[in-house]
Amino acid sequence: MRITRMSLQYRWRLVFGLIAIFLASGFQLALPILIGSAVDAANGLDDGSFVIANTMAASAVDSTTDIFGGSDNPAKSALIAIAILLFISSVGRGLAAMVQNYMGESIGQNIGYQLRMLYYEKLQRLSFSYHAGVHTGDLITRGIVDVEGVRMFVQTALLRTVFLVVLIGTGMYLMLSEDLVLGLISLSFVPFVAWRATAARLKLRSNWYDLQERLSALTKVMDENLGGIRVVRAFASQKHEMDKFDEASNETLALANVQVGIRASSISLMGVAFMLSMAAVLWVGGLKVIEGELSAGELTQFLAFMSILLQPVRQIGMMINGYARGSATGGRLFAVLDIDPAIQDKPDAQPLEITQGTLEFHNVSFGYEGEHTLNGVSFKAEPGHTVGIVGPPGSGKSTIAHLVPRFYDPIEGHITIDGQDLRDVTLDSLRKAVGVVEQDTFLFTASVEHNVAYGDPWAPDDRVELASKYAQLGDYIERLPGGYDTMVGERGVSLSGGQRQRLSIARSILLKPQLIVFDDSTAAIDAATEQRIRAALTDLTKDRGTIIISHRLSSLMHADEILFIEAGKIVERGTHEELLAQGGHYNDLYELQIRPNEDSRNSQDEGSAS
Ligand code: ADP
Image 1 (tube, protein in one colour):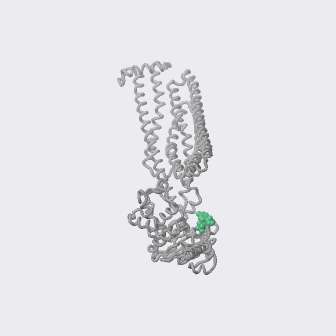
Image 2 (tube, helix red, strand yellow):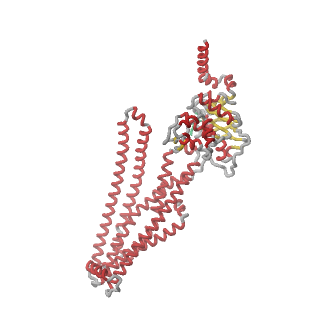
Image 3 (tube, rainbow, N blue to C red):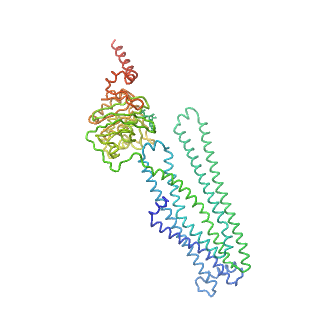
């Protein structure tokens, strides 16, 4: 119903499509009547006898010499008139069918386009909580296969339903009203063919889905093999890999064979049923003609009707399959389109107004699924100040980083920037004001310049270069063969983990956000380079709030306040010196990470001194 309603917006195309349907049906149904009349007209020459062939041959010879010649033979004139009408009907039917198909396809393509855009737009807005729970591959399949299913429904089922109802309905009515018994025999193939065509189509469809799954498994095997080509070669596992591929490939072949089998057998069965009905009509009708109850032309008309109805009856299968597929794919698609994103702008959301740039967590608790990941977290990041967050893996450090740009909302408590609750401001303004440098960096297949300027494609070159220099990436980029125009990402130069992280830092600082969160974003960068980055950024961060999340103490020892977090709770807080003095977890970590290095450096110094 929803897809049909969507089609209604293409009002004029629908109107033209429907007019074309009535015209096409009318012309198509005129053909058997005209053929029947032609036979009778020709037959008129012999006064009811059955020398149809002779008559037709004779009139054909005559008409070539005397076309439109106002023939003195009335049968011949009638034949010529009918031939002209037949010609007009065939051309008319062809043209109307063309308009009908064009309109159906065009509405289908437009709806496909519309749904694809709506779907993609929805994916941009769905919250992380949704994306975390679904497989990316499934989402991509929906965007491609399901949109295609809906499009095909519009194209093959929607207008066709009207066409088939009008054509088959009127055809049946004409046959049955002409001769009830013969009509019933002529139509005897209809239920069988319609059933076979539908069953085969539905089976083909489910088989098609299996086949698609097998093909995607095949793709996965190939993809993994190519992705892990070094491992495969290093472990000399080509044979094993070939076997894996062979197995997946064999399953695909088996399903493809089933597909061919269904198609071939159903076509043959439908052909047999049709021929049997035709034989029955010839027999019963022939007897009626012999007894003079029926003219040869009327019998011909029945046979011609049957031939004309065969194709549309077979299309019932296509139509029903279209409905089945349309409702299944449409259902899946609309399920996504109907989701209300958990995180979205309130109707009265205002842009964030930065007066100072103070971020504050007020007793914030949060959990991804039921269990609390964060418990009563409170802290303040003021302009020019740095807050360091440290703690064991899985303690909730990244979760704090995710709450700042409102990837998720707290379950309890609230987060403010300059007193404005994050839930009351527009997402756009919030995400422009805070820059989160994630640990995993995604590179788009584009030039280095475009990757750095992702957040502001119109940033002038010198700003892109400056941001890269701050992130200690400038020298490396300049040494690349194409400089800032070098392509990176999957189809370009591959960057090391540390280089990616530096690119990500450049990408964020280019935007000069009011608040910067580094979420373990220097994990793959050596300590000396990190030191240089921090020194370069001092200027930028002096009037901005900075949050540094790290498992490496040297990254955040200098912070104005350090939070030690464990199992979602802040268990220690203070400056580096205060925390060392407390002699707690932070001190333990310090003993483990920093002290040994200091000791060894001291002993080295002593050694060199001596
Ligand atoms: P940290 O950054 O300190 O290593 P995280 O904040 O990433 O820790 O994770 C805290 C806890 O939340 C972990 O137990 C982790 O498994 C869980 N977690 C993280 N992200 C998700 C998610 N998207 N869905 C469900 N649980 C998550």
